[in-house]
Amino acid sequence: MYVTEILLDRWGVTVSEVAARALGNLKGLAAARGMHALLCDSVDGVPTRAFQSREGWASALVLMPDEFARRFGEDPVLVLLPMRDVVFTMPIDTDRDLATWFLEELRSMDPNALEVPLLAWAAGQFRLDAGLATPTDA
Image 1 (cartoon, rainbow, N blue to C red):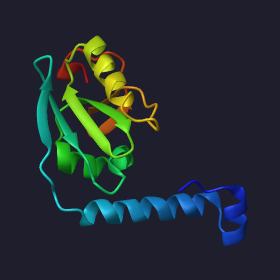
Image 2 (image 1 turned 30 degrees about the horizontal axis):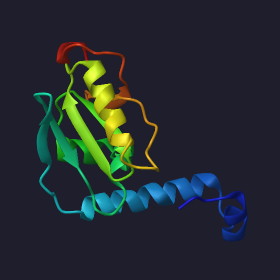
Image 3 (image 1 turned 60 degrees about the vertical axis):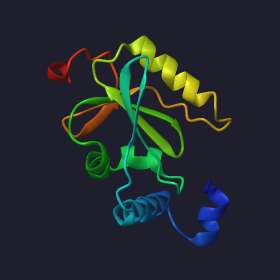
């Protein structure tokens, strides 16, 4: 839901209060959601894994590192967020041209695609991918 200043005024709450409540609601949804199997496939011989919540919040896993780790593990990976309800990962040493192409292909399927750049997941944190070559560099 897009929350406007008018709604905030009507509700009598601050942006910080709404953000805290929204994150709390999201954590509740993620914690209550059973572990669905990750969809495992490959693109040009590179393994991919995907998670879809079926409730519209999968991409928000980047706001909850503990829930991301519960689903995808702790190993360093590239994280692709092409749409609101899907997260893809690829090995951290994936060729960045291939990963970028795949991300763009996925985005092209959704008129409301997200414009999130490639992310790297390493050491329990997300960051913008800077072309990390090996897990030891992550």
